[in-house]
Image (cartoon, rainbow, N blue to C red; front, side, top):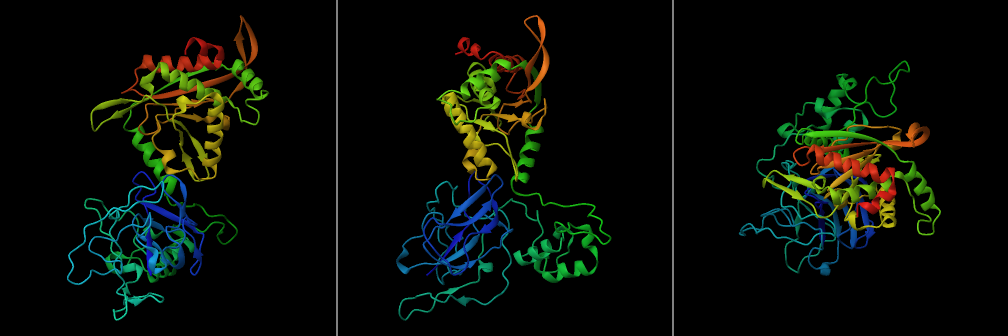
Length: 468
């Protein structure tokens, strides 16, 4: 029998994902939980495991296609005794049978909740956009389908005709309507579909529309394929990159944060020579052998200690309930620059970690983020964040709060500078700390005390003994 796998919610209520690549092809035999695709959500790149053991019969979407949650992406041929749909297989739309048709004389079936693939969000009952219009293709019979003796063959509509109800109140039209082959044609020729007028049903952009656009010579207004040159050897005057995935999510989050929370930023420059000397000593000990110890490691520990003395910086403004939520734990976010944009994964319950455990967690977090494999769950739930701009040679800045958090600390570069030391001028290791906080939650006094505590620890690590 044929089983369809619909794109699940990969975490935190995300409504769509982009198919980056397929790891299988039509005709391949796959096992349960074998990785079949790599998809990019608004937060991370996720490997998609197979919910069935069987043979790939159809890949409904091409790489580069943005797919709404709940939409079929791949069909499997599985054994008849495969039993109920395994985790991650979303139920059909209300009133639609697995064959894409309502059984005659039946009332619409009540939607059912089915278990999900591990780590995925709840199965959705509808997508966030109107479904595609059917192409009026005739129903086809799947080869290999088995039906009870004497029964009519199961008729399965083409994938394009499966209807997914749109949620009321969700606007559509945020991207041009077209099919995956047409989008690929446009991408190959550097055509921005937003500039093309669709002549298909309900404004659908067809292959002919794209070809006509090219014939009219308007393609120069759109993005050129990478590496394409104008006649005469001159490079393109502009390049257009679609706003999607991590970049799109980050931009929306930063705009929301900047114009919702009243930011205040304070700066403190400290002599961190003792911290740098401590790091050198720790690297030579057996406990920290093989671990990556950096100024970020000590700064993270200093932040965790300072938060225990200044809890207002570890809180959240709950507008809906008109409450201030103070966290009794710390999920420490670390801003990470990745090839796909800025992400802020967080270390869960960082307050309970020793310095050794914290160093291990930071190394794992950085490696996972750079590879683009951070799980969606690790990108949410942060309570305060650190951004290390010093690795880029920057001294100070005004960091923007991660949405839902009260504070973020930026670490500047550690520089050798002339500095007052014991009544004389000496060459010392100096760092500037930049703290931004939400003034609705944190008063100037509280923010200043927190920043002073972090600075005191980094200036003299022995000060920890007076704080805990």
